[in-house]
Image (cartoon, rainbow over all chains, first blue to last red; front, side, top):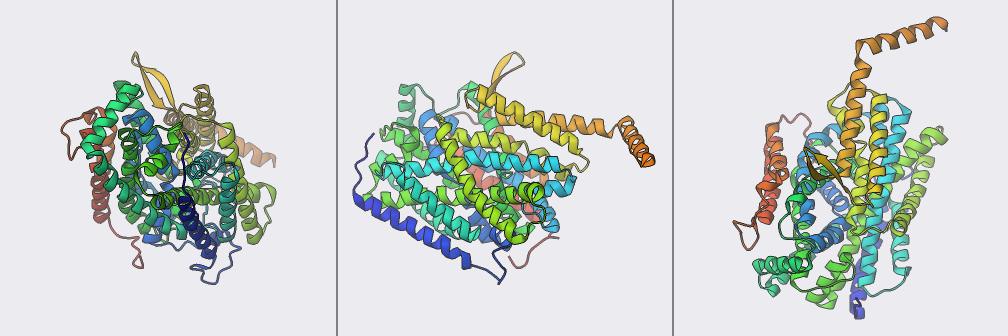
Length: 504
Length: 62
């Protein structure tokens, strides 16, 4: 599809993006109590001082991403009701946050942890397990950043800018302000991002259905178009029910294990800040649901696009004057830029502390540690670019679900360990390996489709591969822990230790 | 009170319960408005749990 784009869209869009970038670079000087940026707690956690409202903006800013504004409506446009699993996902995630994250924050705060791998290192003292958690964080983040880059690419296409240059410019701006300002940049830009996206969504849900004859008419027309196309319905088919529930549950369990969401959690001032945010953050879920509905609005408006990811920009272009389209595209771009920043910071904290500092250069100073993190934040984005180029997926959501599969494997070590203190480190490591290897092999075997078909009680059901993999992981962990705690195993280990003691 | 937090899971993961069109509300099929309704509902349930628990870690500066 070709989109004729008057320059006013480009001017408005680029002005708002320039504003966001300027804000990002000046964030370096925001809320600094005279501490040097050379410390990782300053660069990578913004000084651990964010209260309820800034945490709300930061967590909302990095949790609701191009996934929300591009990938979910594309899936709804393409497949109908099945794409809505993002709604139950982003509802049930908050009881989980409320139950687990204040506990994790308290532990991290008490021990000065910056990353999930720090937490695991202090709890189990096993370097191999710490490394496993750090690796999962890095690898899981790359497809998620890749999804943000897809979002940026879509915006530049919608503006009618051809070639890789616009993406490259956005990429360099993103890299620069991350490098200089650390976590303060996305925290400050998130304020602007939210204001912009709320304006766009309010305008869209007020104007578009009115022009299409109301919501009943929108659902009606969308249902007919889906039926005619044969790609989905307004309700789930019986075979879609289990995938729907397991994708929602698996995504919710994974959501706050990512380096970027944990970074937002650890940067909070107190455990109560996080509890209040579990109550307040669902406001964003309302926005996510509204944006998901834009997939149906596009179907009802008769929008046809060459690739489903273009559906929101195409709908906006059909419904709004050019200046507003420019504004909306800037909002979408910022929705991709803010999380991409926090993701690369979170993953960079992991590499510098838990891999480089632990294995390469244990005697590094705080300044060197931060410098490595700054450099890695650049490398993460290059890695993400490789995912975009080498993993062509039907729906951008698949990228996020692939990351989800990998990060879910840290659930037993990071979260289960909070509630079950006696888990054995070798068992956790074995579980992580089993879940990661089986899950990765299965999802690539299924052609990157994140739902695996299994036979349960004689009927075939599709289950989110990430959830299956973490179930395997947890089973291995629990069986292994039970084995390690058996009196015979303990006695043998004690005897071995005693033998070693007498020999030495 | 913590049992309240299980309600959103039951309500949203037992999909056949709400995978229907009627009753519609403001033009939304049941499948959609039911799930939207659970956004404020689960927020409210978390708030109830928050209020019920002792405030040993409250942050007055917030």
